[in-house]
Length: 310
Image (cartoon, rainbow, N blue to C red; front, top):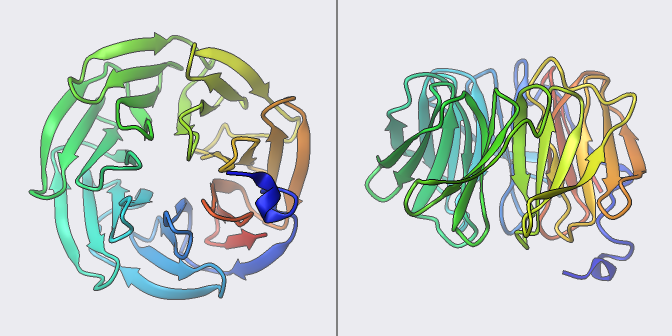
């Protein structure tokens, strides 16, 4: 993707919509659909909402979860939304009808994270408090692989090509798993000095892994040689209290991450320098998501507000 297509790249500068009180309490998760036409949010109120980000309007409300929604993702074909819940289950809803197709049970504690490869809508991967990573068949609605990973898994990210699962853990490490066999391929030990709260991969290219830690740093790892190419920091960046989810722009040029102080920081991947700071949230920002097709960015906070920037 060429940043020039969007007239100055993917850096959002201004508020497009403030979606106030989208959820009661924490909004843990935000995710754009793969076409960029919908935004999903999930929160402590046990609800997933779908929005039209260009209009700032809610198009549907998905119910059925029995605990906080901790993560939400669209299937690559955008036909379904899958949410990870504090009740130990994942749920899969039809975007069109709003009906729940599957409740995926097997985790013995909170499910912190869910992820898809870009080409595979029939399988997903999840990571949980129970120190397992699970791979699910979404046609049949059951677990086809259970990987014991030795440390609480706060985040999972599939490689876009579907070959690998990257996981972030309580012990500060990121682990790399073979998606097909479930075997441990690599361990980036002590990538962070405290727990890894999030891992995300380049949305288009599989070039970088971005991890956020409770040590208030963001690491950018080159997935060719697994070298850390940038350590992104700022005196205002505080991610100690809660899980914070960063995101990387579709052209791999910029990483964005929210902070407990309500700011969203944006760094250049090439230089590691701070490019921009977005200020509007009155409360700590928990999750950021970049639209795959534009400079739109969504950010979600601890008091139920979601802001769409462009």
